[in-house]
Image (cartoon, rainbow, N blue to C red):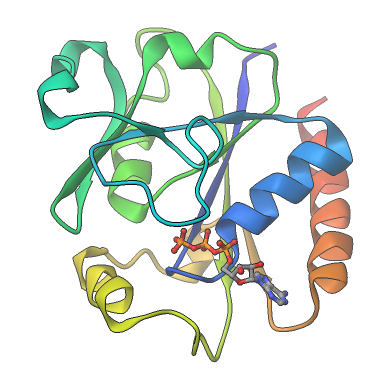
Length: 173
Ligand SMILES: Nc1ncnc2c1ncn2[C@@H]1O[C@H](COP(=O)(O)OP(=O)(O)OP(=O)(O)O)[C@@H](O)[C@H]1O
């Protein structure tokens, strides 16, 4: 069976990290944590939100699987991170997803499942983070495997993700 990577995409503050944590806690799925040159924000934890590294620690492209530049900072994962227990959850931006999709069959095959998280009224997100969303490319909703509206409570999100995960498991077993 091919490794299964669940890619979670969405605007800043839409709930991607929350969704990833729920899937890890609820289903025991592992997370693929990307490296970044972005400085750590308050409340973030190295190894949970990202692996935070200095610009001079960026490896050569040949070691990278998915790569994106977003808001002036680099984000990537390395091939060896995909050699884990599966399914794995991977919070990724649209450019990184397109990059990853282009590598789905090389150098070893894996299956991608894409989930878009949408949330209205992102009033808590500051302008700097909103401005960075201008760096994003638009992937139409219909090209995602699942689109989840995160406009209710976190409990609602938890319930929707549980059902979505059951669908994913059924399809890929
Ligand atoms: N359904 C919800 N109800 C209430 N709060 C929520 C809900 N979903 C997410 N949040 C809260 O919104 C904030 C942003 O969520 P989260 O960090 O998961 O977003 P994100 O998409 O990962 O953001 P970023 O891309 O900027 O890292 C967090 O404080 C989270 O607890």
